[in-house]
Picture 1: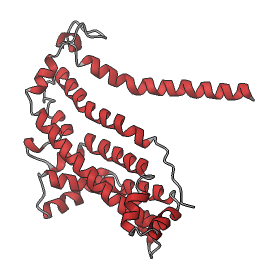
Picture 2: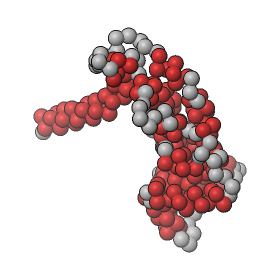
Picture 3: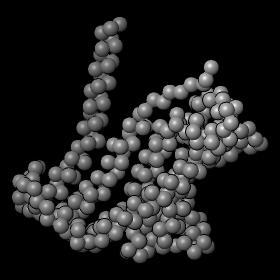
Picture 4: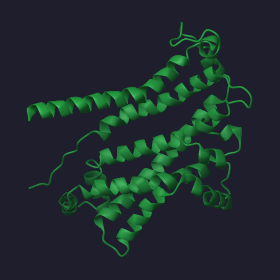
Length: 275
């Protein structure tokens, strides 16, 4: 029995290591290639590793509107995450604590909204945003992003609140807390891993999204990073070094944010009720 468990554990570790290598290898290649000179990258002197720390491609990126694209992405990602989390916490709390007519049906509709392909929703969303007069604006793009990140966030928060004993909230309300104060001070701390997991989901989805950003934004000064990087690709030729350098710069913020929020996502919250 012990040998069988050891074999299964070893096989799992080998599989995990293989998946990690497959996942990380393209990123490592992109980072290393961004420091190669053009001949080392696409010319006659191609090689696996760069001969030195060549920063010419990063200098070319600095000469573009990369900073503008970056700030636009930050504003849209921050706005989308904030709105989605506030609505998801309130909706998730309502679904987990109140029983009303159509509760289960509404929850199923929320989840079904997440299953529609993004391209299928592009046209109705475009008409809605145009009617609101928010085409070619970061506010309109933010609202569109909220619409497709919110369903999973609501489902996630609802499940986290379902796992928290109702007695904790009842004890707080007996002590004089209002329902909102009990939600803020008693329920949210143990649900913090769920909030942070939803935040990570929103940030990653918004940061890398291309279809909607390309559809709802026309002005170059309002483009996000995904569309801005696509604009670096020419019709007949592409500066791959510049594109790889821009990709590395685009990757850094989301890696740093995930590294910071990971401790909350993996945190095991504990709590109790006064005796």
